[in-house]
Image (tube, rainbow, N blue to C red; front, side, top):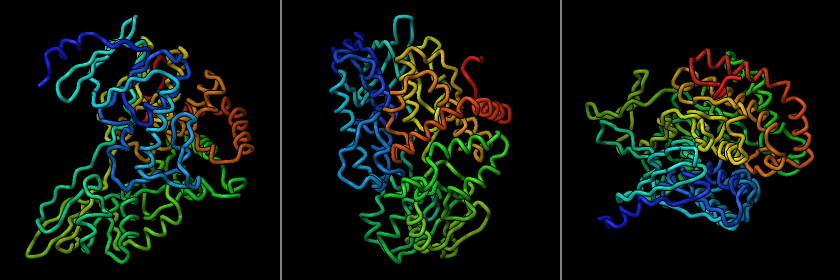
Length: 491
């Protein structure tokens, strides 16, 4: 039971200069950016519903690894303390340790009061500031009066539940509740059916075939997913000096080719020049990364692959079948495992603009996305907010949910590339160069400085010329799919 005195104290607001809700990659990059504008004695309140820093990395499956080399997944320009090869793909534990390190570094720059275990309830903006109301699991309420509020919700990546099945002869699990490297899975030799052909599915298949050589592992891949070829995007050793175009240049090239209608043509080019797949019929692309070695391991270790969608596992006449959406049935051995690796990203939040009309609140979430990843959004939007430019720079926002739900999934990744290229040009005009130098998330940092400088010069030379094309592309997406895609106020 909550002490009545604690309830009464909640009416007295905590006062701070910045309140940040969310302590994942978006919230921590927002915190880094805000710290560049605050003095040592100014105060930030960091609110997080989980009990620690890390965002989705706290909840996700235990054998997850980064897609990109670990140094390119950070907070601002804070370097990793990990003594591993720079191409190392960090584990879940290593990522969480790095987030803790980043928070500790930022504690040395600005006063940070953490409120872990508190959930955001509401915010009321006025000319004087923002009143933020939060609640705890035991019924307490907390009011915060902030000069600025950053709602760093990012992507709503939740925990997957096991798939519901009719059969009593199979075991249905989720990676979030079943570490496939341990426990009953290790004690069993029964076949495994992985449901889902995206990055979680690839991680799971790769883990299974390397942990249990010779074990039967089947894949129900849905529409399948193709990926960015890591060997080309992030070459190792001396090849960084000459192999492959820089990632930013690839995105710029794709955005130039895309006109809002020709995603099939652009996808064919991208897949042939930069892509890799485990299933040749794959049609989905959501910017995931896979190496040739990972692909070879997966394909050599897989049993059957079905380009179909799982519906159920049913017992009939003493046998058990997997039922697929096409109507096909595949026999499955009693005792087999069904692992739910279907989509984790759930975009259920209502729309709100990336910056409030009063200019004191920014919102980092996919209903009003201004970049391709939440970490970048947290970083750049906070710089705009703290420099007083969030309401004056006419960034385009894109409703990811509207596009994905409205039939635009094939166009999604190329629309996001056009969005990022368009908005980066506006950000480059509005923010000082040090903001870009301090952004450790930039994939181009994988390459030697001379190549990066040449890439920056190319971007500076072409950004204004390309801007009209990107804007026409985004306007076409808006009209074609009937979604929110444009500046908050038309200019």
